[in-house]
Length: 423
Image (cartoon, rainbow, N blue to C red):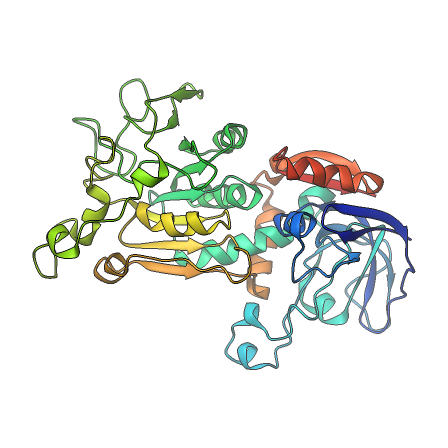
């Protein structure tokens, strides 16, 4: 069979490889659609510890059962299926604590090779995380099961409710999947990115506000945009009669167009070192309204005059870039008692620094999220089966297996969101 081989950073070869036969409990799936992923792109650009090179790669897929091994009862040849590429062992220390996404064996027993004509799914994956594809889903939509499972793992434990304010940092495929799920929950969502094209997509997908950063280091958006006089309370109250945000970088007006506003401050000015703690908060805890959040109230070029919702900030911030500077700046946009979800994976051995005063006295929650559990996969499957998310809108184009290199070259130039590889 033909398979795309990631030979090394920046180089993909199409090669003939041996097609394995399924043993007991396994199924061989003929790939109908495989999707590019941010992790695949990282591997293509610089290598990745979880994707050996040279080797097959790709892990978001759907297809048709080509052959079923002995003992398989749920699936037969010709069945359209959708799956994820991992499953926990249920035996290790973390599995016994029901932390299935942290299973000690889950990465060692994962399946790669979706950018190929066929993929062999091992018995532990077949038993837990393979599903029949509903007829109302295309194969491309069904291939979203894996990334959507990750996003479900990120969002669902938070119990976000209608009207909660959310900021997503990064409008790549994962940031936009967060947007789709958060809007389904009724949240008010703002999205920040350095690419106007991606922000336009975010708006089409339902973002309430978009912010265009003017730097490749970190999104420069006003953590506490000034409220329009007389506006209603809440983090989205700073909208004037014309529908524009009062200030800050670039925002979207009610007509659906991106409107230019006065330049935002530079990263260094926006995040200059705070004054000594004693001067910033002379009173002892508990602080008066705003508390340690006073760090965010300091004026930077007149932009940070008054906080969203009277000095609160966002209820939730989702970091979806994997950039250390954005990890650090993400805490500047969350309210007291709020939560920052650190989804984007940074390079190995990366360190970040946070203001301990904010974390402690503002009772902020910083939470890293990784992978998914079988329960998350089932929830993602149900969401896709309902057909209401519209995930196909994230697909920027289609390429043949022979064009896999071209698809990743486009992604490396920030062209497109996700591409479908169709053998």
